Image (cartoon, rainbow, N blue to C red):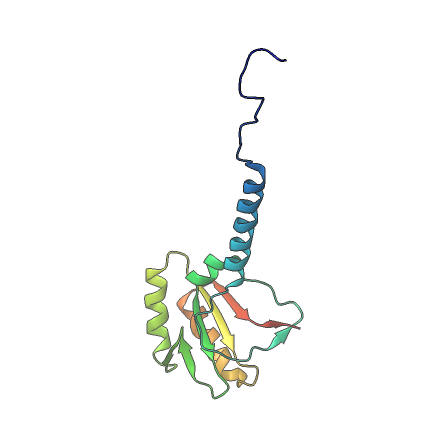
Length: 140
């Protein structure tokens, strides 16, 4: 007979923390991947032209701060999602430039849009003095 402790050597139940940490990291990684894949485009829906060198315009927060100017196939100009005329554009751009500390403009143009409308929009942006201009395209 063994002397001493009368409990019969029962092991105390422990909570294993390693599998819990694995699950937490898996959930964290999943959450990050899902939130990164939810891209937010503030412009109207246009079918973008394709380019072999389509580059991303920086991270998602940068894109959300940028102003989106869209030109559809009929030649209509949209300031984010609001339809405006080309005559209203300079005043709107001036206001945007004075409120944003680092103004960025993204031009969305329909592939079927007349190029003269796109050039007119780009010209106005340059005349106001906004240097950071990106043209949104689809990758080939």
